[in-house]
Image (tube, rainbow, N blue to C red; front, side, top):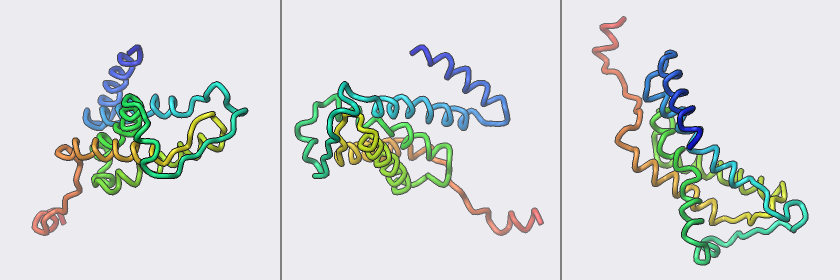
Length: 160
């Protein structure tokens, strides 16, 4: 909550410097909505570096025993990316592209947790939930996406 005034100030500064309000909000929202979650997932556990790395590669195996707050947290990790990236970047304005981006980033996080021996379980269910959260958020923001439109030929010939 302490960072909220700073985020609002940053949006104002970015909006005044050659960017639209929409772009400024999307830029700041992408960072403020994603970095804290990624930071939390990369925090080491109490036995980091000592405990052996744990891996769960069976899809939906951990999901049945996962507490509800953990499921919600995993859905929110890349929700800001899913919601705001298509608003900011027209090239990402499709659900499959958002799913690919979120899935790739989630795999990167899980591999990092394993490689750095952070005393966390590297789980395919986390990847699935992170990706699903981004996809659901993308669908929720679809009406505001930037879309590249082809200019009509008549308009192009007038400009030439």
